[in-house]
Amino acid sequence: MFVPEKSSTARARSLEVFPAGSNGEFNLPPELSMVIAGGEGCEIWDTEGRRYIDFSMGWGSSLVGHARPEVVAAVQQQAPLGSNFAYVNAKTLALAEEICRLSPACEQVRFCASGTEATMYCQRLARAHTGKTKILKFEGAYHGANEVGVTSLFPHRLKPFPSADPSSAGIPDAVAKDILVAPYNDADMAARLIRRHAARLAAVIVEPLQRCTPPREGFLQTLRQACSDKGVLLIFDEVVTGFRLAYGGAQEYYGVVPDLVAYGKALGGGYPIGAFGGSREIMSLVREERLGQAGYVWVASTLGGNPISSAAALATLSVFRREGSYTRLHELGQYLRLGIEAMLAANRIQAQVIGDGPLAQVVFSKTPVYDYRSTRRGNRKRGRALMLALFERGIFLNPMGTKLYLSLAHTRDSCDTFLERFEEALNTVM
Ligand SMILES: Cc1ncc(COP(=O)(O)O)c(C=O)c1O
Image (cartoon, rainbow, N blue to C red; front, side, top):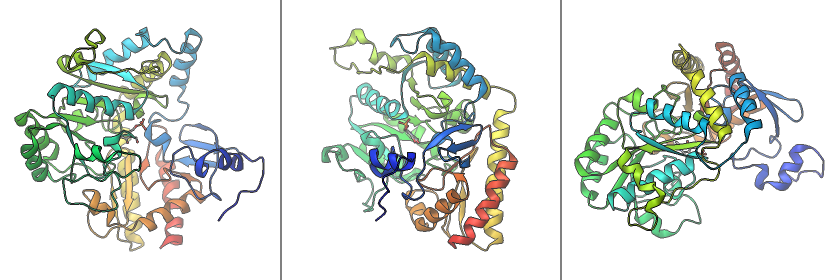
């Protein structure tokens, strides 16, 4: 076992005060753990002066790039005017109006401080609106750290569908009874489950592009139709896809409009934010004058809608709206995915490169991946070893896997550097 020396290095201090030296980012081995001192564009540096090219980008929250000047200026302008009032302010109002303009599902919105809260409120609203309790989710989907979000996220025992697996201790058994689990991308099974359980099913929640796996043709459309036919609400968790695949997110990109939508990550330009919205009718359930009445839905977030995050988000959205932003993000993603594919082929390594837009992931599987179980068949040990080898070579990525987040700050040059180091890393792990 690695025992950190008693030292004043930031690394040793973090191993002392955080479990595994990590604040929840899925820890690195102690000898590789580090403490970040700063970041700019697509680069970060640690307290010991090592520089990394960042392919995590704050788990995708810094899609505009770290310390993007327009975002920094907006925050600097707002900071002396107050950072939180827990009440509607000019910045939040402008942001809410813009979200209602860009998001087809949203007539009204509310803000919170994270994606976890946003999807949790969507689930609660769906249950209250329909008077039903069950939620259908897809195996392997993450909707934040709330109970539905982590259920069947990493099931170790593969139960028959639609049985749920808690995937985390501390979740009461009763929770699983209200969650149905289906395989992502199996439109027929999802439609059958929706029809069979419609009487008690409040909502289907889906990451339109699950983790890094794109939806099959017609999958989201089938969910939409089956939900509409049976009085079940469709929730899009756009915490990752929102503002990333298109300005109007997955709704615009795939042409499917849900009943409720949750946002987070990229919206805040790296500042804490969550937002959720839907029709005026559904959203009216949160009106506080209904407190005490049947159907009232409790929503409260001390920091939700704070003017600093809202100012950062307004600046971020103005960057996304610039001509060419999405062409650039899609081109970069395609460049990186094709580069990785070519390198794997040249080294005669069978693997799948998945993703869309500015997202990419390598799965060491000989067969195509389209859902949790097909992805799980991949060689995860090799994926982890590759990630660590990349990390040692100055590529910072989500220590949890090989999912890569690009940003507007990345260039073909940064992708080329990644590819060079990827080849070296491959040689050490294969
Ligand atoms: C699809 C999806 N939904 C929700 C969340 C939770 O967001 P947060 O970490 O801001 O609570 C995440 C975070 O990774 C996510 O990927």
